[in-house]
Image 1: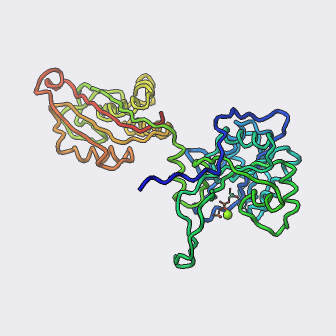
Image 2: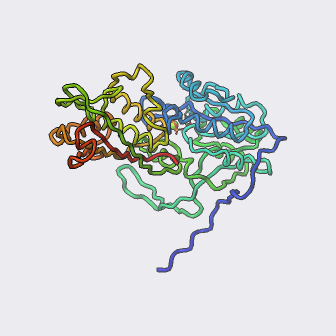
Image 3: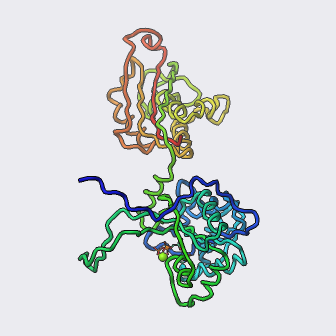
Length: 405
Ligand code: CTP
Ligand code: MG
């Protein structure tokens, strides 16, 4: 069958236009964040939960601020005022209390927005907002539109069903779009529409309110990243969409310690009885030292000596678990994920084989990795060189990390 021609798009795209907010217009953004997020579940309402380490609400505040919107108003529930203040910290945004329905919350936002020329109304639950989208919407209103919203075409067949899933009818998909926010309005038009709408009416979006008042409304090309967080699984999906480019990096580490007097060595976190000890400033765990350097290498963050200077007395006799946990914390802070680590211990004695699995398990535990992502191996140098003469013990490691580019 010949491929079906795509239906003509109802969307127009302004991506090529260099959209700027005109200086002569005053702009206000109302972010409604007073919902309870019941469908999303979780201890905190969805708009205060983290998305790539930042509260969901903060993403939208940042986009409106970057676009140069004059007045950013966040409508939040009185009970969440503290969480809201934390989420907007550092931005020139004002908080106003919301209502029982989204429509009531928008009304509260409009009251706070005064007589702004252009008003954008946005769901806090849509953190994938770009400054470019904000500028494009404002430019649409500045060039004469009364009400504009981003929207995406519908790719799936639309059915009307009833309780139990029985299909009642097929809906006509031609021209159907999924409307997103922010929705941008001529200030006078949206104020008049809300003034005309009965207080008791609850709308799911604001285009509907102005349409009910006879205002022409239109849509422009939306953005998949503007999806609304509604259900628990939406968080992981959007987190992936907002992740940006990632790269896989392999870091490599090497360490060696001299044998000295003692009755044990510590390797990969395990104390092993031996007729010698290892000499070092800390616990001389060459395996984990090499591994820490491998992780730091993959992060491009120097080496173990730079993070834990041997000259600093606080690291004297320190357990290397602290160093490894620190390296893991640095990876977490960089938004990196340790995918796999591989440590090779090089020595004639002690024999590593009997302890190998316990070393893997300890390393996996500290790094929070499944066992099959951790390898510990051992080899000798066939009695050659300083390792062969048992003057010391060495280790090499690699760490593979997935991290932001
Ligand atoms: N909202 C609001 N005031 C309300 C209800 C909703 O400001 N009384 C906001 C939400 O915080 C959200 C947006 O409107 O940013 C869209 O609503 P929705 O996705 O339905 O969020 P919730 O009402 O919080 O979620 P749920 O319906 O699952 O409880
Ligand atoms: Mg709701």
